[in-house]
Length: 404
Image (tube, rainbow, N blue to C red; front, side, top):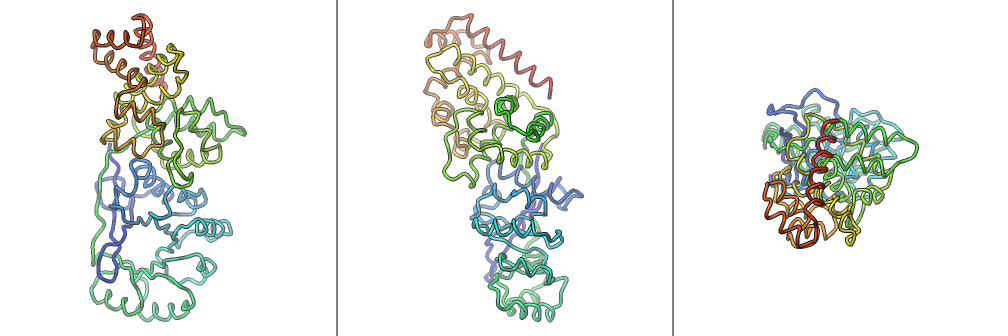
């Protein structure tokens, strides 16, 4: 399955592209679907930022993203680097004290805020001290109306962005009125992009939502849910690598990851997943293989007590096939995940104890029995130990997939 997104360029006076507005699409038709706008925003974040990063879509230019009321109140912009996005506030959202408080908070954190489809409605005046960009809908207003309205706001220091420009004449007129950014069909229509989508199990997301609604978090139980779903684990690690946490922490295990971000941020992450409704389809063979490898590496680490780190081994196995999920090289993926250096060494360089566990799993997976025996001999494993561990890992994986 694929996710779709459209991007429309935003240009300066020299007609150079300086940013893109990202627009959600749910199919090949280059039109906005009939879905809740908060859901559309969540899907843009989940399908793009939590995949490999918005910069892949924008070519490292800033991304303008629409945020409706619920997405703002849930603080979804805080998942994203304030240097890479512009938070567009839709003018048709309900004006509340809570929304104003969110805007103040985002502004203090360094986010650039824009009022989208702005038509100079005075009820938005209370927000203007926190707004950096006014996106004026030039189809809704005459040039005279725009000029008069701007004179009323002359004491504010805005960047003026004119949207829905359709002719060169309008473009030239708006430049004279002080507009410095421009967007519209005169320059370019939204360009459709297609990406391979990453699907998680609906059952697992619903389980997480249930845990999130409990008075106290059970990190062990929540870790168990993540341990069944490689896609959710990947998204969790991408979430941890978002700008809200400062320098990346090297994660050694799922429970470590969950405790590191804390229950409040974890609830935010779960809310994002639920609202985005990731949920279509069941895990394919790649997911099954990832689960088998994860459980097998964990079991071997438990047998080899000298290593004392089964959870790290589990995470190594689970991420070992993430390149197949994302259609990206394992090196590219590891560069954007805050996992422990031992895990990265195992998956990229393949030359530490975790890599040996993984190599043994791959040999068994491919039916290379002699190679498996040689690897097992190196780490002094008996045939019965690793064969039983692999069989048990298959049963565990199948059991996990059966309940999704």
